[in-house]
Length: 428
Image 1: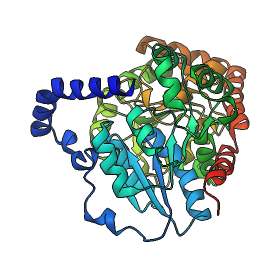
Image 2: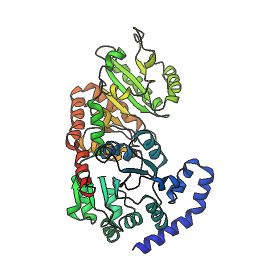
Image 3: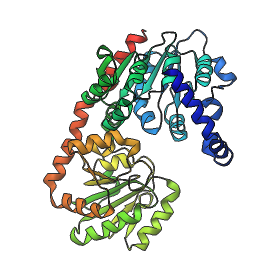
Image 4: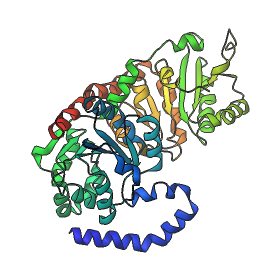
């Protein structure tokens, strides 16, 4: 089966090579890390700490990198002298890792799942353990890494029903692939059941919860919530926050706000664009829609008097603002960006709405919808209806907030549970 897989892999790259060569020549993101992806890691990798164990953590993209951040911090605390390598697949994941993961000694790209590139990559790193975030089942990679009994762990693993059905078509092959993995640390009972049905050995499977909850809960517990006084918001107002918005979303959401304002006179708007370079653009949109607003950086004295909105033109205030909001609409979800972290308002028991594009946080979005702790809308016309319903029904706001927070109660402690599993394969 591996011979067939290897043949199909080479055939795929042969057929698609003209397209990828064209992309390499014309698109910068395709050139990012191309040498590393082919297994050519360079001189500095040969200069890694001699005699130290090497811990390899793989996080495919932004969501996995963020989820791994607290776990990596704990690994560094427990194994301070070892070499820590972090790989990603996507360029955005790599950039996020470089900004947020200061504990890693080396951050690079994951090799293509071709035998020779994986072997070359492994030859440079020679890892003592490999920790894979979520469920990345690359057959050649798993086969080659585990050849000398290097433990491979799936951490924060998940396997959706859709993914399970896809893997199930090649169950005979994947049963063999899963044998290369030393432990499966899964997010939920359903994830554990599906990985077992796919062929993972029962004694290797553990249910540890979702790491993302620990990461957000720790940040939220340290939050200074005096933001209401700093903003000098109108007393008793209802606050609608448009969080981390992108181009193409503000116009829709500002239009919704204007319609809601007719019915809910005490509704106050806070718009938080994701990227600072768009502050001026959003300012013009607010003016165009006749919304009296003030920039966050310009609030002083009583100059918020008569205003109905704030343009959040600062970095780092948004999580604090979530603590005092009434309702949140999470941006990056009405346009195909992939959404942003809905756990940030949920930790404060706030009802959160989001659009259909939540692929960066798909697992969390599914949990929220399933538990009733969040509302997903698929058409802009639904947004006004859902927010109006919530504003008219404070009890429903409270219920949704509580259901969202209950997900934290079920998942907290995932970091330490995963650390205990890692300790079995990497003794101090």
